[in-house]
Length: 265
Ligand code: NAI
Image (cartoon, rainbow, N blue to C red; front, side):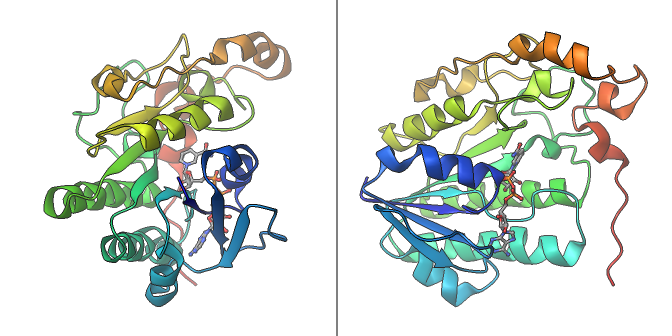
């Protein structure tokens, strides 16, 4: 690929992917509203608010693929979610439509199904059960991606990320964790696939205690190699297991199910 756009490149996942994806494109175009530092040798750095349609139109021009990580990534005021995750996503898809339909990886979230219980093993056909306004914004994103595929042929990999950090940060993440290496290999599979369509993919490693199954997306050839289980002993030694009746132990979305709706100023 000539030019891969990464939005949200200054964020946690964006920084990790910036460091790991330089081999997957001749040029990485990195974008965020936050400071990205100086551009490296095969990098372009663009400051851009996803809510600014004109700026997003320019941002996408000349890109052959998009890893869309930008946006509000936790529960927040609706006005912030609205700008970044709803308007921002619409702007991105309109720009992709105007500029030759570069394939998109959309970072969705487990919080679209956060109100399922951890003892329910669901597939991608299960109705959404978002656990907050952030989760609702990801439901919107998934619906938008689906509509742009059916109406315009825009291909998207909708990746419902469980949690993607260097290692699982708590016991709940033993089920939904995805390693950076597994995410990198997923990105490669998505952009290399002869035919993508608009699949929903659970963004998880090959964890022993996973709740979700990716067999419907096996045509992509993605075979995650990590397993969160290797961190269980460390977690047991360093933190209390969540109480069996707590949200962290009951719901797939963990404590997000208990978050309030944040008031506007
Ligand atoms: P993050 O919060 O660290 O990074 C998001 C980036 O988006 C930030 O650098 C922020 O400045 C940027 N951003 C926010 N509003 C923006 C706007 N209006 N215009 C342009 N940029 C804007 O989040 P993280 O953890 O890196 O997650 C990346 C993506 O993956 C997010 O979409 C998040 O919802 C999704 N995700 C991440 C998970 C994880 O475990 N890291 C789990 C599930 C989903």
